[in-house]
Image (cartoon, rainbow, N blue to C red):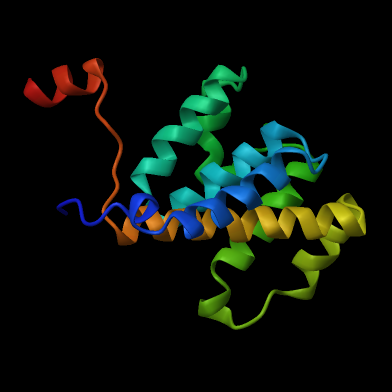
Length: 158
């Protein structure tokens, strides 16, 4: 896909609003590593290469293991790699990201999330899921992909 318009430069108010949610989430009290895992998993579902690249790098810089990154898409079968709290957050993120397919979020997924998060945390987690979904749609819709690093360029040339 060719790059389309630069949405952030075209609509400064939209960029400011979108980034305002990001700033709120940075200070909401949920662990950064959890928010980044959610960002990466939702970006996997949405096929947003720009966000996949950015959030995987951020997670590695934050000390996340490569094994957990490699297994994130199959977290349900990765027994022992993700905590109960992370699993509840990932299930909630997947259900909300795919809500158009089911037109509902199963009660069991809500109950698992509610058991792991306070009311405020669950609202903030939901906002984080909404936020990464909108970032993904902006990047995918307007054709923003990752900038190849030197290693990727060498591999593509081989």
